Length: 233
Image (cartoon, rainbow, N blue to C red; front, side, top):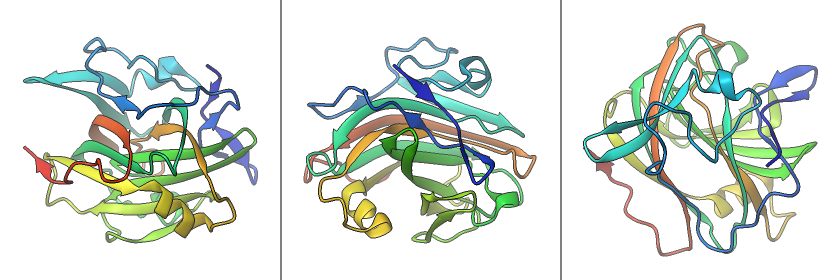
């Protein structure tokens, strides 16, 4: 598997996945549970430009009967990626669980100095050097439904799907129609868009603060097969 975690855009080092053009193509839905991963270790099948650095931020943890990916970012930004292609027309839905534990301070994802999020899930399109992405974020300050370009690159679209601290500490199940989001954010020039993979980012480098969040049960789904998006204790 060939993966690079960062690319230069407009002379800036942008945290965007750069998946290879030879990624395996999913013939069935993708389902990532972390159940087979060792507690306390970096998750298998995920990678980063520097796995050793990523392992300082991300590790599999367990609580009661649930195994999940725990992210603890102190003044840093390390993105990790899971590389596998799938056709959005066939599996348009993305569903996952996440839990916000500690929000970075002074955030505003619209500007460079405030572009940190407690939780972020990317769907990545294309391969190096032509990369696009949709980043779904849990923002501390920007309202749900807001969408805008990353302050670092117009190739990365940010979409706020959870906002504020009312559900902090609670597992929440999210679901998005990525196909619909792709058409709305990038236009309909591409009739059959193909995703290259999934990436995760909990970061606190731009605000020089601290962010902690958890991720679990990430899956792609055909239309009509998704589960209700309800909070989970």
